Length: 143
Image (cartoon, rainbow, N blue to C red; front, top):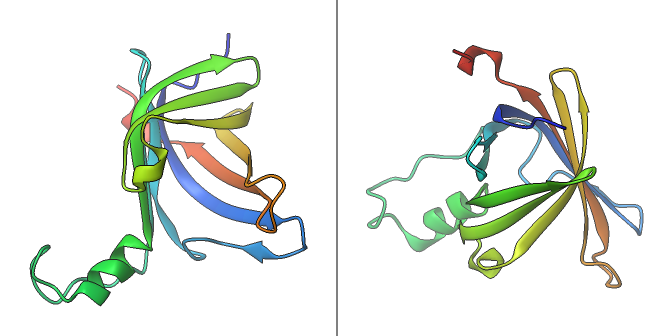
């Protein structure tokens, strides 16, 4: 059985659009992790490493600054299960509320301490693409 449990650090996230575009949604320099618990819970946090700090408090900064910070950050969590070479994330809460109550399905390939997750998104539209995320096991988190 495949063991994804543990903490994985983000290395890269690129989206390959069917029309030939290649986009890095949060830029070239990323920080973050995905964590899979032995209890079937998961959490994912990814951000642009170069996000600007807000000029005031979390709720008092100008709306545009807050929107910019939001657009350079992704997080969600919930439960997960493995089905063959696929991991299904059952999203309970997300910065992107449209994902809540839904599933995020990722094909995975595990090679040593590297984990590749891919997903087909918006199939059948002009925005159809394959998202590819590369992670490395956080060996410093092992007890």
